Length: 282
Image (tube, rainbow, N blue to C red; front, top):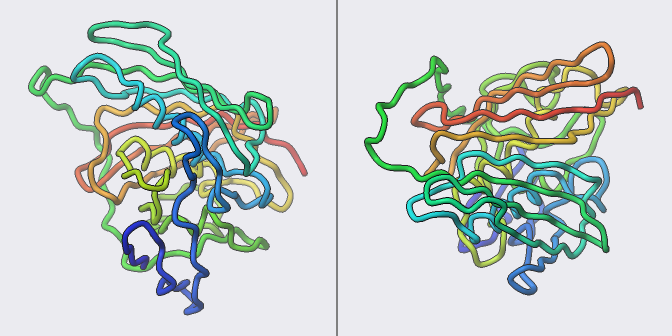
């Protein structure tokens, strides 16, 4: 289990096989200006150490949208992200704009650029939330207990990767080495931006872009899965550090796939995520 001291991941963290995990950088990003960030090695995904995993940059866009804000008493209830291409582990810049201003319903947009090109764009709906405005109506999802054992972030035939080590993973169903649906609890071991506390929407987005990976239905060695879009809707946002996802991937005969994910915490399911996938032989 990770031991957090300030903002750093201590070297006392160990893998399930007993070997020590090397120290992870203290944050996914270092701020250069309010709109420019340096991506640290912790953002790197499993395929290429020079490319970011999708989770951190999506969460960074959400952070910009949160900072821009909406009407008083509002929060982000829906965020839709489009991936224009791989995001390099490099300096990135973000521009946020208001697309529709409103007193109760507000739409904003954030765009990320790296090395002179647009790599990611997100739009967010901010809705005013009034306590007691509606009766709560819960779904049928049953939250699994938090497993006692952490899992090593390693896909079959591949090495550990920095983004994987930056989160703690505890599987209630499935795992990195298994094909098919998966249910996992996660907590982020480091901040998104050095010196800034994580928010609920940031915790969710750092995690959820990995849903298609943990629930893959075809072997990674033979097939490639490219997420081109991610949509998250949440009726509430988590307040505690542990958040989970129950993910299932399906693939059509023409190479288009969908990952459908239930988002949950200790209080129950709170949202849903959908990823659209381009699937092809390697």
